Length: 355
Image (cartoon, rainbow, N blue to C red):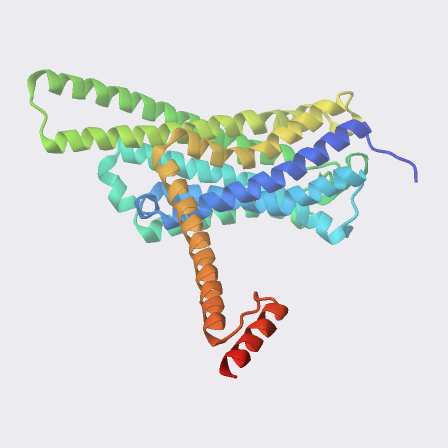
């Protein structure tokens, strides 16, 4: 069969190995993060955590569904999973990207309202409203793909040259550039503007607190509020780091797909590296959580300690069962560990003694 791929074999192999590594790291990292956040009451109670969990679940789905298929198609340098899965694959890929970005928008708006409009925070972030926001994030992310799914504006299919299942042109039209603007550019602008407003608000708050400290003795309430503000600012800084890393990882791929036609490209390695960087965005978030926030580090430590305790408990139970079984055998007579000859000699000695 004639090879029509635009990628050099070395580039395809590099992509396949990278995807395989990311599957292992991404599934473990995101799964551990989800369990750690759910099992930590201190973090679980924050409204921000709901959106962080949404982001983690999106990354977990990407690492467990999209990346394994991607690794296989780059190893084989062709799509071998049939037409039906080929139409589903881009829905999962683009839908997960949209969920990740809109979850970050949710996190950003949560941070801004907490810091800039604190009086509204309790009213907006009740449980039912948080659930409604998450439903909106997930539903709108996949609804944006409906025109391509239904074949109204582009269509889902296989691009032979790149053995990639993606959004293809239909009647000379494709929704890709519109999705890039609505699903990528606009959320990024909202996040950038929101974090800029947060930064300005934090500077004003710091200035006000410095002025109060010059004239007033700090009360316990003020010290507690100051500590809480520092904790909120650290969490906000962590979320900014996540967004910046997401932007750095995904922007090259988005620009490459929009500006340079991958089918006729003269720089295939550029597209491969851009794709690998985009995949990495689903892997790095747990590392950022652990590196930049002590509450999240504490949650990880508690989860791992519980897992270790559970493992040690099972080992202890097995060990006690073994020793109990061994002791009961010793009481009843000659044990299995006693050699047969030694057992026979003991019986002979007893008989001689009786005689």
